[in-house]
Length: 426
Image (cartoon, rainbow, N blue to C red):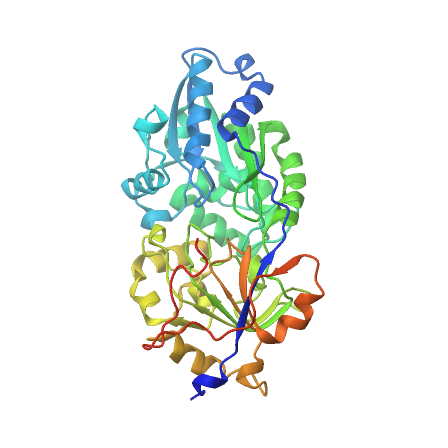
């Protein structure tokens, strides 16, 4: 066991990111949609399905309501559909509740939510599988998409997570998500993405989309309304901006990374693998991938995850309470549907942070515990402030993008060997 006096001391840094932010988000939605002159396409009395579903988008309920109000201003009749694959264990009522947990309710947005797991098979893709589309959205006169553009947790390319992907597992629902993820294993994400979206855009009433790019603090930095025919070209450019603005760890390598909160409202894999350097392999970074983190431990699962612990199989250790917060069935459904079932496997668990550290600090090679490259963060979504092992101090003093907030001090373990929750004030 590691002696309590020989644990790494830590100091806190504040990272300086580009924090540009749109203050009047609903106003920007209205301005962007007005710029598309949708009244030339959407006629009074027509139905408009507004697709929403991704977790953790800043002020998403206000964005959706602004979209609803704009459609009503055109004299059309909007309704909302959950654009989710296997979320809420693939159940329609559960997916409606997920939207409501974001604040997207019928009373707040002023229109119905029509949730169903039923799809329409619109055709067969060139690769030989059925292309699914949400039944309610397919029956509408128009469909408006809304999603955040960001790097995906599994797939790499010019287009990753955003409006294009929403047309696949999102509006494909559980049936579509299952077949698309299977097809990606035989072909490639880029090929299946383009194959399916080309069919959807030619056969389904997708009119436009609202794309969101967030800054390092998870706030709206860019918001753009895009006509359907320009979504692919614009999303490529927005992804470049999303990569530049996303948060990151302050150093390129670490022996131990403690993460206070993981969950589906933070990332599809609980933790953003783009942040921790595990996009291509579950337990190590690829040769040209950074940062390089040897061991990761999760301390808790967010309530917003509703027990979905998908992604926990990518990390090595966790607190026992984390596993107690996991709904095994929901997690397995998500893992099997996505084709990344190893993400549903369980890490080694320990009852206290002290027990966790005792084990982890003996698994980092010849480095003595006080010299361990330890990083402690709230989540991969909020990285403005980070607790860093004292070994990083010399480098931090040379960095213009880091502000040192404290001197090195002992980890704040209580008598029971537990670190405090909410240490970062998030």
